[in-house]
Length: 132
Image 1: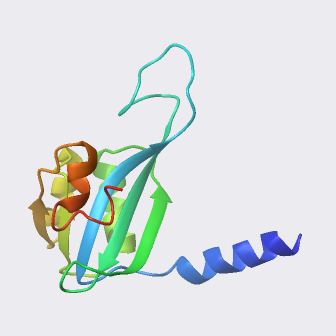
Image 2: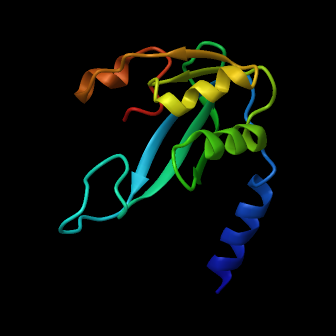
């Protein structure tokens, strides 16, 4: 019971936080294996999340993180998330998922990174804290 109260207090404390400066952003999905249906992006069996990490100006040390579910990785959901979670004029790095183009429309500098796959993705400057 006390654990739940502490967790709720943490959620309420972090709810108004907006990330600023240098931000790394990625899409993620939560959900176990199920038989049938589509796998990966767009699966009806998984909950989509936006994961964003604010880092120092050298992209070396994380300062804050936001992990938040979204309805879908579509333009409307991302536009809403950007307005609620990012301060104006952030410098954002992503893997180039199409819906992340909303970042530029919202006035943020947006750099897409080719992270490839596997272990090498953790070494890409600007994506280190998301591709673990």
